[in-house]
Length: 267
Image (cartoon, rainbow, N blue to C red; front, side, top):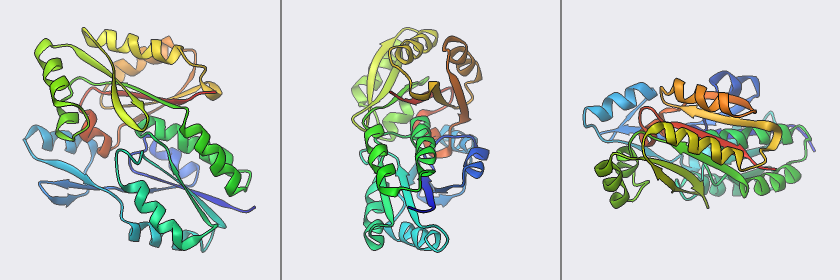
């Protein structure tokens, strides 16, 4: 029992002030533009990609995690470190390697998701950590990771293809037919949910997906890339509390402009 610190990474989409209010440490994945490290905003990411620049990310290293854990454990009793899916990045593996140096003090959670759904996981971690029981909190978080849901709509799959997050053939089909994909998180990966004609049907499909589950806590988490109207549509159609945030730069690389990404936990 004791004071638990929550750590996540910069693929977690929550309002910036939320992290401060809830004392959550955010470790940053490195962003590279044409191979050079940059401190860059989401808007700048989109602009660089429009110019044809190659924008990529680099995972957090074990050494970075070890240094962070060591510093934090000087003022906290333990750490619950919650990160994006191990199938999308090596960040979780880096955290696991670092945690080996702090046996019994650090629990690392593979959220099996990212973006707003990772936000839902981190919010739950904060809630559970109030018990002061690291082992029990980690055990419950691993169960939630098996039941976290992500559903999102994007205007184009071009960015996902460039980032290796979608099948090229499917991407060409979407471009050719001028239809829109609805994507979901499943088994820690990004997969096609369905393909529809026009973005309004994407939004209806997202609402239908949310409605098909019993949402834990009556709350969903929405991230978007300049898609305010889409967010308002979804919010108006679901009888749920909505936590809304802009996509972070890492997620913007793959989602592109106009994307809406919804995450939630299921009961």
